[in-house]
Length: 124
Image (cartoon, rainbow, N blue to C red; front, side, top):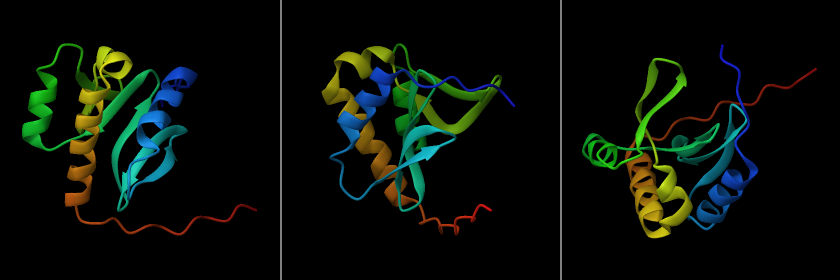
């Protein structure tokens, strides 16, 4: 299992600043990183210094054509199917484009069948 570096605080702040006002979403931690879920399906999240979105095939292909976008690899050499890391320039400077890709990710997650939530385990 790889070691996980925390996301930079400014990236976490940016994530919340852009996603906190989105309707009908749930903020959760996924492996200790902020993530956004719709009906139990992850739409977007952070991993180390990357911000990724989950998209359908056509949108994923379109995003991958943008300079700086790329596959999401939690484990080296193994891409997460369906997810694309956003270009750092978009995250930092292009809020209209960022919000557009987030809207696409949320719409994709909304179109998926809802995932049943599992009861939380009690510790102790």
